[in-house]
Amino acid sequence: MNTQSLKGGPPNFDILIRTYNSAETIRGVLSGISSLSSQPSQIVVVDSGSTDDTVTLCKACGCSVYDYEGDVFNYSRSLNQGFRRVVSPYCLVLSSHVVIVRPDLVDRMFESMRVHDAKGVYVDFCRNDEGVTINDRNSFNGYNGLWNPCALYVTELVETIGFDEVVPAAEDQHFALRLFDMGYTTAALSGNWIQYLNPRVSLKKKRNDYVSIAYFTFKKNLAMSNIFFIAKSALRNLAEFRFTIFYDRSALALRLLAARLRKPRFRSKYF
Image (tube, rainbow, N blue to C red; front, side):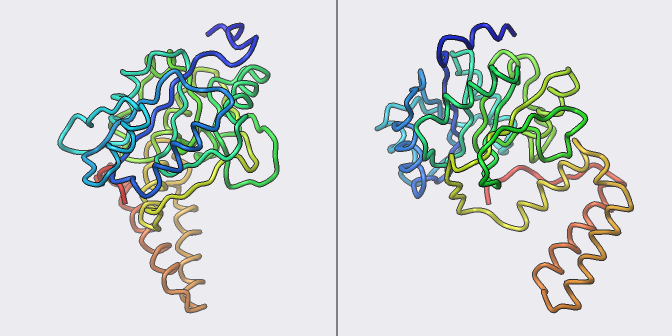
């Protein structure tokens, strides 16, 4: 891609949101989008059968809403279906529970893409210090590729690579790995840019992400040394009567052992 197109201000971009019974948070999401200093050409919504007011709220704000195609939900497939409706050269993937709190977010993401010649930019909302970190194949640890709660993509690259629908979770990290293998880099924008308000966060979801990354994206996490480390952590928490963490670590260690023998069989799902 020719990065000259990034000069002279932010280019056209779309926003892609995946929803499922998201009425509790989607109002804030759409309000945050409306506050951006650079507005999207369109907002594409792929809805997976919401039974609340999600679709009504989205349509009332002018979003183009499409039903998820397929009987079994898959994160990657919903993204691929959404990108088929994207018409701009760039697309901001935004979760239905992420509220943008700074109007210049998209401008800063495009600036990071231009200055660092990155082919993807995401918000690292786990860090409060404001800055930009460049990631490549050498620095990749399975978790610092792209984060789909808020990530800016080059549409042409998504059309070329696509999201692998075999991957049941953490599809963003798997996509980033494929970018890195092509010699590209990504940029992480840290600081107070968004609010992450996911009502479905759970230890089970985090375990699914970890197992998916270990099997499909970052094989080092399947090493016996790593599994032993997690098992020791489980026993340490048991000794300290932290039973929830003990169960979580134990379940993760057992699932990683199983993944060494066969491909994980869990499905993508909203929690």
